Image 1 (cartoon, rainbow, N blue to C red):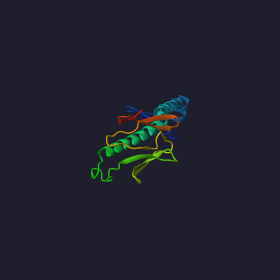
Image 2: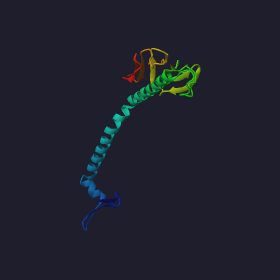
Image 3: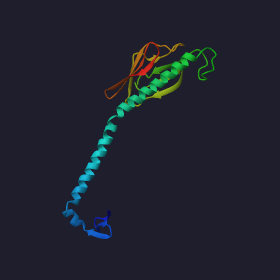
Image 4: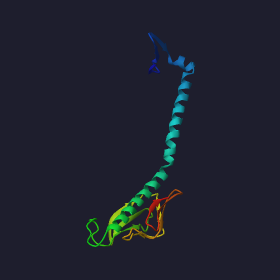
Length: 173
């Protein structure tokens, strides 16, 4: 089936015969109505696929923020448990003073990785992700342990928690 133009007419090819139907004749036969129904059906199917993905963006932001915090906490735990006096395993840390994760004071959407009074890394989470914790900082000892804590993340009434238990395990719940 070939369409050239609505104004010039519609050409339908079948075998060796050519049938020419004018646009007005097709309108009278209901062709335009079928075309319109098919277009609306295609648009509704596409919108039913795309719209749920747009609704889940808050959940994706929340999960990305939780994974970022978890990765930095695990790095912090690794560094703090492997650092000893005079160790050169981690070049950014050359004393027995390890890293700490310190949450922002005014805005609740980020944190610093701090060695002593020096900021090693600044992490800003998306503006609509709020971070709340019972402690303002997290530090691990040489065995990889810290105080049990919950770091709560919130986006538009959806919550997720990064949990550090007494054995030093870090998980997202």
